[in-house]
Image (cartoon, rainbow, N blue to C red; front, side, top):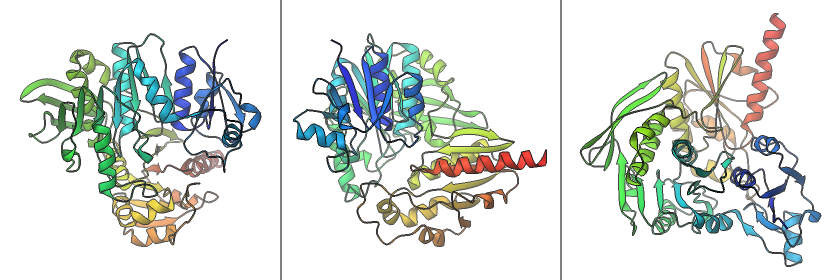
Amino acid sequence: MTKIYHFIGIKGSGMSALALMLHQMGHKVQGSDVDKYYFTQRGLEQAGIKILPFDPKNIQADYEIIAGNAFRPDNNVEIAYANEHGISYKRYHEFLGSFMRDFVSFGVAGAHGKTSTTGILSHVLSNITDTSYLIGDGTGRGSAGAKYFVFESDEYERHFMPYHPEYSIITNIDFDHPDYFTSLEDVFNAFNDYAKQITKGLFIYGEDEQLRRITSEAPIYYYGFEKENDFVAHDLLRSTTGSTFKVSYRGQELGEFHIPTFGRHNIMNATAVIGLLYVSGFDLDLVREHLKTFAGVKRRFTEKVVNGTVIIDDFAHHPTEIIATLDAARQKYPSKEIVAIFQPHTFTRTIALLDEFADALNQADAVYLAQIYGSAREVDHGDVKVEDLAEKIVKRVQVVSVDNVSPLLDHDNAVYVFMGAGDIQTYEYSFERLLSNLTSNVQ
């Protein structure tokens, strides 16, 4: 009898990607979740994967059960039922740690840029050879015959500790997830422990002073813009069609590369991928060819035009990510006003990084703030309101509600950048409806 994989919380970004991957490998997959729409469910629906409401009846003893990390016996009936009846299940990261042993695996870790870098690596490698991959935007591809596996390696609650990939990229270290990590040193220690599990090659952004402290049994290769790195990106040409740059390896020129994405951070992400694939033996001409066709990943600088107005949707929810996203917007649209619409994600992060958020948002020409999106993990919301952030922003700033986004219309020749990890897309959809209605009324 064919084993059934049941996912508790299948709409989670990693969970949905894993479900798609197993489905494509020929396994029978189903899952359960809340009714609320989440952007990852579209791919599941297109694949014909059944999404059920949470119900103890979904749990069978002979199922392979994979549980999302947010679900516990006190907040999920299926976890409670499994515990009560002695039915075993694995958490996402536990399952993944054992699953990847069947492949030559490439991990991508880091406080920021994991998803974009995993997307670049997955795109290039799968166009060169048969590759399975898991991207944190909910995208997964599974092939039963694949030799290689590319995956996003998440540091939250040290979830990457079951992973022992042959190769890994680490993009940066930054203080985040203050509901779990106590300090930057705590974050560093987690990444350092992860680095010790890499077996063949570790590729580290060399201009991150925390990453320079990392130690590993595997050879370490540094990449960056500065000459002291092993892989150096230089002769940058950033235009409205993307970024062109050259890469050298320990003084040897590897040639020119182009990626149709924006922002200095994406040049670094691509350089990490070039370095990894070069060291692991792939043809750089093929790498060069397939970098040119990378179309991006979901909710990372995703663009649409609604009645002539450019709208960018991005997952940025940390100051470093906001700066990178606004930098990318300015590269592509140098003559337009950059309007940021930002929803702080979690009260703990907002409190811990209030000044940094203000500094980052001041990179925009105007700022609109949505109400803070709290996490189910947060028992105490703390003494912080979105107005506290607004007071620290020196650029034009206003707090808006999802029911009234009309203040956003007070701009001509603007690009609107919606950023956040909560339900910022509901604000975006409200604005899109407003733009559509304006056009209808004019006609």
